[in-house]
Length: 158
Ligand SMILES: *[C@@H]1O[C@H](CO)[C@@H](O)[C@H](O)[C@H]1NC(C)=O
Image (cartoon, rainbow, N blue to C red; front, side):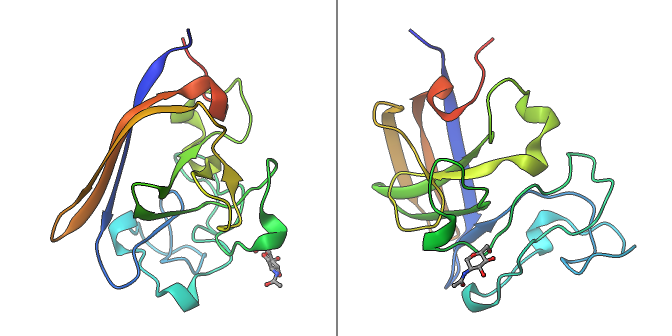
């Protein structure tokens, strides 16, 4: 049996709770040579998500591979959508590699969204991947914790 790992996702609970792409040094999503902008400060309303949250080069965790504006044309097994949505126990996403064979810590900027449901313009988590899951909704955050066969979402198991 393939290895299992913990999947955890935390997001500030606001009117529009969107996990919008990996962090790194950045200019607030505007690119250029701006100073370091922590992920927590990269906040966008749902109707104003940039094509790419990180447009800067030379990011410590790799440059953003895909995009954050996702729709029916971007959905499927080759999707490079990087917007992970968390709505409920039955409808959430996490990030995993776009292809097998690479260490997560080296490609955080390339991680793409995999979702339990179609309709978010992303990849869909294959049946049998998640073997246990817990959804917590607290006043200031939501959290998804569980177990999965990570090899089904291109995550190597060493
Ligand atoms: C769908 O998303 C892609 C990627 O962000 C974008 O290039 C394309 O214009 C979008 N299509 C529509 C109809 O919004």
